[in-house]
Length: 256
Length: 337
Image (cartoon, rainbow over all chains, first blue to last red):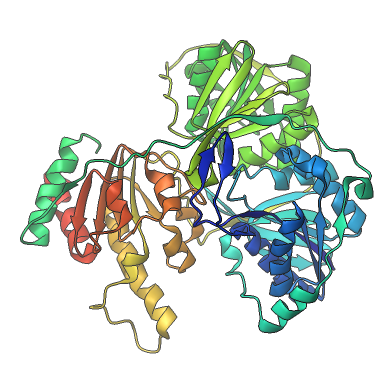
């Protein structure tokens, strides 16, 4: 069973991200594997173990994105592929889906393609379903658990209305949420293996596609105004006294 | 200007932000509501009552359960034949998929989770938070139609005119589903944070009650989760009294205290209730981004330096295990419940 985990490299969540001259700047904060994609790699590794499979981590990005792929390798992925091309600097989600679909086809014979639910940077969460649409494969989104049996995959989707059980024939595209399980830490052996790995780089001409033109573009970038508010601290001699004062304040706000 | 508004519903239960989308569409011109499903006459009628100029209904057995492929194909076919300028959706798990796929069919783009949308002639500029809310961007879509999902409670809800009559037109379903819905897990009930008027949330602090003794035989992690569940019981009691929903921080969800469906934050659900009571939540940036648009925020936390206090209207530095039940009791009395 061949499983492809699609990942992206993003600025660390702790980074002080700012708007500078219309561009996003994160200073010297490190770039890391998108935290939600660690769950994708974890989900892929769980399926590899359950079904005697192999995991290939796939990423679009600059040369430096190899570090994110090395993280996936260190976690236990068998192979990693970077799609990198100067023409890919201005991708929207549909463009990313088209390029990923071409790379997934070039890898060939994938049974499952697994994404994280969204990225920390753009955060639109559109790419998994768009990749499924381009490939004409079933989309099982927001999976909290995955089970493969007899050429089909059943997932529990975590939705607003509760958990929905959905089934599709393989191959299929999935996105996973945190319920899949905590991403494993890279092992010492895994880190050694990853540091020695050669990661192939595919260009657009390797994939046989041209750069998709972005339909969605940014026209303005802003740092939101700081919205620290004047707080009123409620104090008292006892929890009952505090509760009394706080209850009156809440009732006076007319929000109940 | 013609706008399609996709009315998102689950078994006939409409996501209220669908009506907010309908209200927004009316400010641009003609609003055509789209209702997909099986046996959805009531939803179509409600769309008329909320002000749709026309309702297109695809009522078909193949649309009984939402499946992205059939819903997207049905939408794409309608958009191709009627050429709307704009298609609006409420932001939900379903619409992110549906809009994503249909945008591929129509060779256009999706602007997601908008807090504002301006029309400039026949183009649109959308405002949306990115990088976990650390930045805001304006985006434009050069494709036609422009597709956009709006954030719940970011736009006003139009008034409902009961009994209003209007044009309801039947349209056909399209596409083939590639998956089957096998059922729903009974273990978890619905959590609808997106349109809750009141949310009471718990964080890591809910597990921090040393006076509780867990049942014998639990290891450290089990005892922590058990403690947290006792804490969440207090949070839930207050939420129920106020007719609100129970939320949680990412730390509480990652700790296994409560399910992911309750998570508030940029990586969970972004909410904007009238009242948000944060219990034992320190206020990591990704959580603050998810709730700072609440009208009134109350923070209860042991640590006076917790960042949550920078966002709150009212703050209590204290033990949530004492304050929360006392608040529940007091409000019960004052509200005569």
